[in-house]
Length: 326
Ligand code: HPA
Ligand code: ZN
Image (cartoon, rainbow, N blue to C red; front, side, top):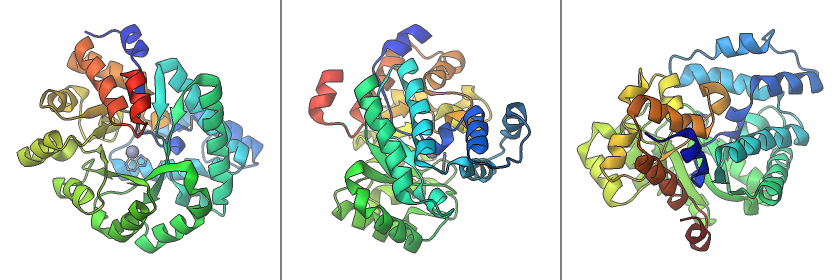
C-alpha cells in the first residue's frame, strides 16, 4: 500500500478543481463579515452539517448560495491563495482550476474583478510556491447557450488568461449538444476544451462531449463503465478522465469508496487522474482523495505513481515542462 508521505512527494497536477468549491466555511464567514453579508448559517459546524448531499443538484443548490460571499477582487484572491496553500501541502506542482463566471456576473459582479483576483493569486503561486497553472473558464450548462456566448463576450478582454473552457453544473437534461456552437467558437479562438460528462449523465454525454464539443479531456467520465465500447475508445484514443473520488461518494454516484472503478479503469489502460472537485464541500484536498483510494481500494505505490504521472501527461502544460516533471 502507498503511504501518505510517498504520495505527497510524487509530482502531481490537479485538473478538476472548482475554485468556488474550495471556499472553506471559515473563509466564508470571514468574507461574509468583511462584506456585511448575513449568512443563513450560525456557525461553521452548522454549515458542515448542511453539507449532507443526496445527488449533484442537492450540492449545487448550496454551492451557488455559498458563492454569494465572494464580492471583491481581494475575495477572489484570498479564495485562490488558500487553495494554492493546500496544493503546496499536498505536493501539487501544476493546477488547471475552473471558475464559473456566470455565478458571479449574474449577481452583478464584474468579470474583471473575478479574473483579476484569481490571476493575481495564480501569479503569486507561480512566483512564491513554484506552482504553475492554466485557468479554465466554465460555462454553466443549466443556463442557455446564448448566455454562454454572452459570457464569452464579457471574457474577451481576458482571453490570454485562460488555457481553455469547460462545462459544469446540472448535467442530466443539459447534454453537450446544447453548447456545440459556443465550443466551436472557443476552438476557433485557440482555447482548449474540457467538459463534465458521465458523472450522473449517460455514456451518450461522454460521446457527445468528444464528438460534438471536441474536448481534450472528460471531467468525471466514470459512467463510461456502462459501456465496454466507450471504455475501449477512451483507452485507445488516450482521452484523460479527471476523476474525483470523494466527490463521487459524497454525491452518491457510489455508495461506498470500495465500489469506485478508478483503479479498474487504470488497469484497463485508461488515462485516469485523481482530483478533488470541490474540496471544501466533499471532505478533502488532493492528497486526501489519493489516501481514500489507499484506504478503500488498497491502492499500491505503483498505481499511485501512475495516477500522478497521468495527471501531468493529461495537463495542458508544454511538452518541455512535462519532460522536466516526468
Ligand atoms: N459537477 C457539475 N458541476 C459542478 C461540479 C460537479 O462535480 N462541481 C462544481 N460544479
Ligand atoms: Zn466538477
